[in-house]
Image (cartoon, rainbow, N blue to C red; front, side):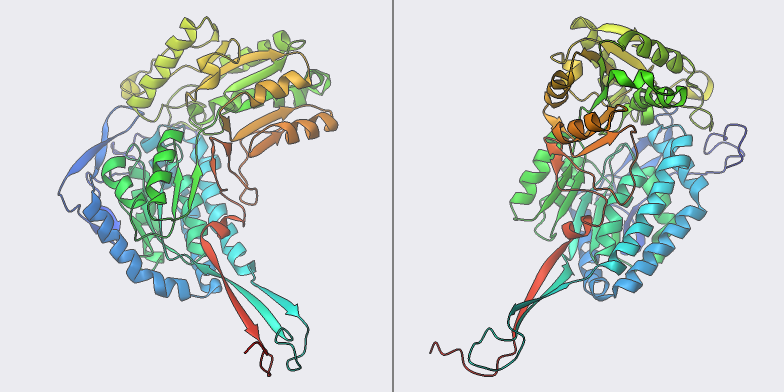
Length: 520
């Protein structure tokens, strides 16, 4: 991307993105007004300005979307894997062709610096659609020979074969979070569509804009009703979707307490759920890293700063840094120097590292935890304040990159803040590092930094988390399973195993015997 000056703020004169003043629900391949006629304002966290109005939907709108999905599901489910895959590939191509527009929409909607959707969110979205296009083409059923090969003879099991076919569930519900609006939609939509399901999806009410831009971009590539987008608040739209007896599965990504409610709703109809929930991920640094090359040490320092990616609004944010006591001082000095060099300017400048928090509500939550940390006696190593911005961004929601020094029993170590806040502590030996890492209700992600392969292996197996990064962090390739232990969720996202969450197995048990069983 050749962009040396910041993008013009969307909607201003000369901007490459012109949001509409109002959007509707995307149902049955068309934009439909909410049944109630009610809308709510969507605020950009970058400036505090209104982006647009979106529908304040309710159960009636969910039912309308379900009607469309049920109408579309039979034909889509019968569409061959090759044809479904080709549509997913076309979707990927269309997104790739419009990466600039979608990146601008994502920054405006979520507040993240535009370098992130350009370099990560949108390219990963493209990759996930392409990956699942390939995965569904490669998927095969199984044939099991039960007993014997011949058909005939005196045993009914002779020639009995077990055929296993993966079949779509039908209509599924999906509820996505506000931290990666387009990418999280792709994580849900790509495997569901590949598997042959029709979808009703509710975006987060904090970030409803960018998925509208996405559907304006790709909506015509899908048969009407295969994907339906219904906006609204959790209780008014999310609950009717998750509790509906007209869906065969619900997939949810978001906060843990909300995930527990979703599971309760789904249990009323005995439908399966996948839950990708919160985390309090440890990032563990062993003392041998300081014996590595300058480039490797720099990589380790960068691993600490991954806590500020997406302003810390990542479920796997490495929000606990656990550093060997022998290297704490020199390592943290390098961290402080790197933080000082961060560019915290316009979110629409490709050189900016930190953007705005996704909403005023989230901003206030983060600021309250900064107060909690001080009250607990944690030492503020750097940051700890609101980040002041000027001009067009003066009304936005910005927080300084922050680090506390304390112990793992503090609330800022145990509770998910979901902001640019790292809680730092030290350890003496491997056993203590494992104890600190696992002393949490969560188990989504973790990082291990060491040049000793044996340490890396032992730590990778001992940490109670669904994903352990070793000498890296915040990499999310499509062919790597992602999901949590403990209170971090149920099921997995990404990887071909995700198809299993959106399919059921049909067994056809066939006997080729030509004589009676002899029981009657």
